[in-house]
Image (tube, rainbow, N blue to C red):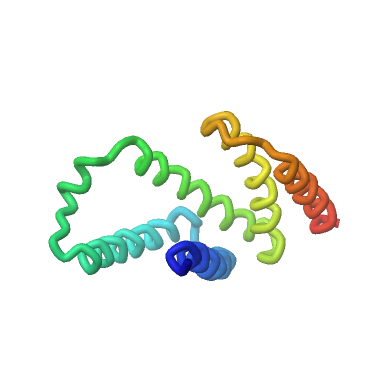
Length: 141
């Protein structure tokens, strides 16, 4: 059970700290300049964790298994980071920006699940979409 729960707990904790950090990027720095530091730290921490968790690890061997996804992920992560930083600079509140994007994301991912992965759209999912949209109405009121 813990193996099922801990990744979600890590995502929630990390996303909470992420939103605080994104909101705290200084006004005087360009968001992309800030992200160069962010990704340098991320690369170093990733390498340290890789070797700490894989004593006989070989990054070059690992890289031979790459496909398009990590490259695309790198591009879209920049979009996520810059989007949130600019949203906060534009005046979005930390209490609503993430919720609004998450509601739209949830609705979008239901369509993605259907179209790309043949996941079923159930009555519960439709009810969830309606609840998300109602929630967006009340959050932005």
